[in-house]
Length: 367
Image 1 (cartoon, helix red, strand yellow):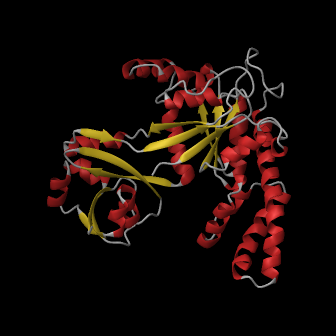
Image 2: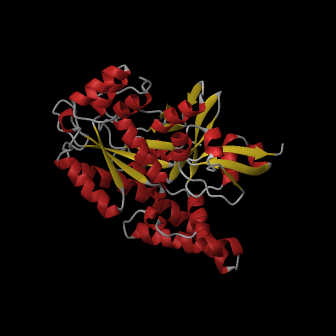
Image 3: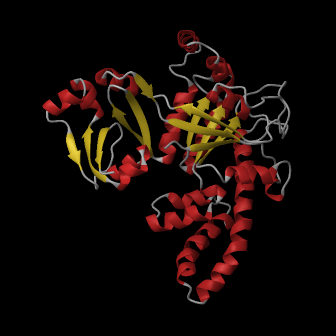
């Protein structure tokens, strides 16, 4: 299981340039005019994980297969999008289909690239997009809650369960606050209801500060302002130069390393972005390894062994018996499965085992 991140923001902030760099394609046209992205472009990229190479070496694997992540480049939004301005209706429809929002903010000065608002203020840009999402959610909830309240008054069991969650969300929106503030400490059953409402502001957000090349390693005053805003929201940020990422995407590995060193960078922005995306959605990685291949798989934090098995094949989950599990450090440190078994580090885990990040697993099941 990967996850789907929608790249959003105002026009001309670098969304499509970042998308092209992430996917190493030119599928999205990057141009200096609003709405150059009309249909959402989707790209799938491998999740970089150095652990794969080390596990494969210990297992003697012929092939390495990383897990993958989807990015969707969504058309730029302008003020009034919730009322259909610009490509607002299409923007809002597309964003409902993603799991998380990667909000690109322009944190660079360049007189040759126009800004739809005529100034550089990433915090105000973020508020513009957030306001449009909240207005859309507010309209949607106000329309739907009328019928739910009527049903709850009539003692309808489903409506009685849903109504408190809807009212809490509505109260936040009426107070000009995003619904994702409900996520902290929410009960599992309420979270299920909230996800079913598919509200735009209930989706987790990662702010990406697109800075000039000279600021890629340290950030600048604009990105610092975004950091402050994000901290107040309990959100996270990543500083990236989309221009640098576009250059790296065109280089061979050795050239890319030399280029990053020259720019004062230790790794590509893609790596940082994916790590933050994993944290955002509370995802972890487990591995399967053997002579044929070493492969990475993604599950939600807290997933149990049968759910992990189901990521490989639904039959594995249905007929799950047990999972031989070796911690990553033991697998690599001892030199593979056989040595780990001999050292007593291979455990047989049952249906209630909660998968840990880095587990190397072998599933036993009945067809």
